[in-house]
Structures are given as structure tokens and as C-alpha cells.
Length: 402
Image (tube, rainbow, N blue to C red):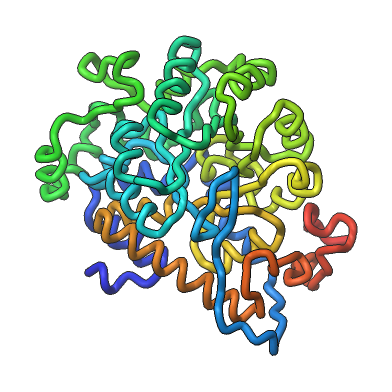
């Protein structure tokens, strides 16, 4: 399969699967427990219909948005994800360059394989966030924030849904760890992908630059689950976060908020935004889809902070539905990771271009010339097999049949 033959999420996923060793593909593709929430994230969009307005004279479409104080040329962005150099030897360098080319936001993870400073240089003037976790080591938390500020990162994004590791059984079956400590099944998956191995070795020593002063990569193996379980602090509370918001002194965002009550609390302690997210279904299986929880968060605190969402986004119509509900911007995860794995920077750029085309086309068909013209009047929810007006009480947040 060739890059030019990739026209959608599923094409990129197939190309990535053909290139990646099975343990790495399953790390990207997998989720927690029975992966119910992972499937639900995308399925939730199918329960909502777009209702276009015609004869609106849409000749030009403006996709720009302002979110968390940053101007984005696109209403979707590359969510921060870990370990990108495993997916392709260019790793975060490719994603930072692609996002900068399209004028959208990119996030570097605590578990990133490229340093904050290098990603910032590659990204140029494009908005950049630093996504980090709350560690038991308070010195590490302070060091991370100071380093991000010195690097010129504009937005701090704290992940709050991962105080312990999710049960990712695909990784257990292959023995996926960092560095690699594979079982027989996992080793066989690597043996079948020698080209990936050559590219990986040529790229130099594997590093986690944000953590290298606190994690010894040369001593033993660290599973992702072990990192979450041993290094992160499950006692993190609102007072801890309030102190970090004050110390950062700039736009601070919580990633993983799923209730209106938590969104209100985030606004009260000075957060500029929240991301409605369930970590791509990788933490608490059986939890609500991000799109299903969006209206509750927006109605509770959308007038006090910027509400973003991620999870299950595969199409431009998914982006349109979230924006019409009221989200300020929409995060992509696997939707750019599979393209990265398939073809590096060229793959990410093609995925962003395809998504841009889909959103522009959808905007024209909806009769909207700018993101601000999208609204809930352009949505109808399927409730008990019938279409429902989203302005009716309870409809946006409760799809149980009457």
C-alpha cells in the first residue's frame, strides 16, 4: 500500500499495521480492558445527525479559531501522545513540523521522545502545549514547568485521568515495555518487520528527554503501566493543581475532565480550559465517550473557560459535530499517529490536509462560512430511534429513550 492510496483513517491504519511490529501497532491501536470505551468514542458521533442550511452563499470558508489564547489556522490539533519515535524514527520532529506547516497546535508529552526545546525550535511560531503528569516527585513537577516556560511553550496541559495505569491487555500479551523486554510473541512481531528495526537503530539511542534525569533507561525495563503506577501520584487533588496553575502564570488546561462539576471547579481555580477526554479509551473502560460528555461540560462552564474535546475523531464530520456542540477545538490522536507510523512527516501532513478538506467541504454543505456560524441548531440527536431537537431539555447529555 502506498501513501497516495490513503484517503481516510482506515487506510492509514492498514498502512501502519503493515509497517509496524505487532507490539507497537497494538500499543497505538489498543485500549483498556475490553476496549468498550475505545469503540464507543467513534460510535457516539454516529448517534448525532448534521442538519445543513441551504442557499447560504458560502464561497469562502474561514477555519481559524482562537483557543487557550492561541490563534490556530485549523479547528483541530495534534493531541500530545507518548513514545512517538517508536511509531516512526522521525517521531515528534515530524509531527511538530507538520503541525507548524498547517498552523495548528501540537503537544509534547512528558513521555515524548524529542525534547521540549527541539520540538519548540521545529515548531517555530506555531502554538505548542506541554502535556505532563503529576508525579510523586514534586521537584520533577516544578522542573518540568520551569523547563517548558524557558522553552517558550505557551500552554500547560495537565492530564488528570491517569493517576494510575489503565489495564492495557494487548501490551501484556506481547510484553511491551521500554526498553524492549519482549516475550516470544512480541519478538516474533519485530522479526517480521526488519525495515522498522533498521530505521529505529539508525535513529540513535532511544530517549525520554523530559524524564531522563529521573528515569534510568539503561537499568531494567519500564512498562507504561509501571510508569503510571509507580511514578505518578494518585493523591493529586484540586489544591495541588491550583498551586500549579498559580505557579505557571499562563494558560493552564486540564485534560481528562468529563463532568460539568469538575469543569466548574477547574474554572474556579483559574484554568483557561479543559479537554473533555477519556484518554482514547485507554484508562477507565466503560466510561463515557468524550462527545457524549461534551454538552454537559459546555453547559456547566463553557462561558468561563475554553472547552476542547478528543477521542474517536476520524472524520471531518466528527470535528464539525463537536464544534457545532460548542467545542473550541478538537484533538486528534490515532488519526495522526497511524499516518505518522505509515509515512513519517509526509503521512501526518497528508492526514491534516485530508481532514482540512473534509472540514471545509462539510462547512460549505452545512451553509457555514466560519466556525462561529456552527451551532446546536445544526444537530439532531437520535433518541430511541427518533431525531430529537438538541435544545430540548436533557437531549444533548442523555440519549436514553423516553
